[in-house]
Length: 167
Length: 167
Image (cartoon, rainbow over all chains, first blue to last red; front, side, top):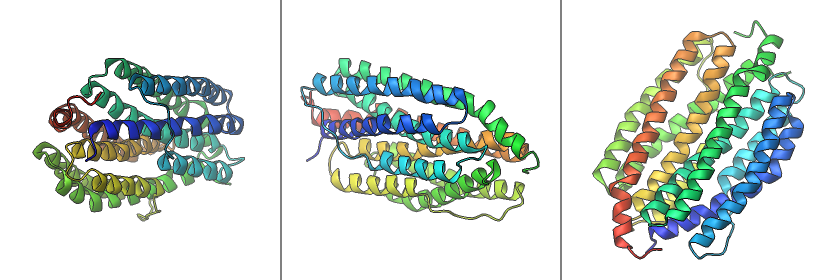
């Protein structure tokens, strides 16, 4: 019979895979971005994501487990969709809006997952793991907020200006 | 060349499909749930989701467009994963925790999508559409919060009690 700890470790292996996939994709997103602000946001988030990989390894260690990856189909699918959007909107003023939207979907997948992991670590009585997971969660929420700010400012305004009679 | 309005309408068709898929899945989640609180939360969210379908139709109308569905691969994949988890954790005290986690991933996909849609409706100068999208966004955030509350209370406590030496 599967237990809460099994669920926890499976989800941890899933997000460990997702973070690795993000480190492969963020440089591509940064390269595709047209605005400097957005490129910089993706570059900063790449550094954070590399940090999250180390932190997730510390969570595995807090449970006396070796880090393992389990293919995260959700992130894989979302990133594929993002790739297709980047291609579809190449050269369009709405490109940055499309890239932001793709990145925010992955951010929110991570927010949902780290939220559950932090709750479960607490219920399993592992306060060290819970504290690390809360740290990562806060950084993912801040990254999402940064993308929100950029979405409401330059990149989308450009898209609107290109197409002022859009409605 | 694709515009911000194209991106907006594509995303609207994607979330319109996602909401339909959720109305098919929520009764199954309610049936699978072991705790009364969780079953009730899924039932309430089904009613809200039916309301979201009508609201998204009003957003299409605000853009003088007919409602259309575009297969939402992300929601399709997340719901499939949820199904597999429900099967894997059947009879386990961690079942509700697994169901909550699956539902929260879809909620967060919707939160990311409605957030972008509301921003874009504003940039496209359609305040009526923006107001409706903000309404839906608030309801999705509240639904996620309700699941958080349940996750930290009974369902997971049961899971922990079944396995007090889990760590």
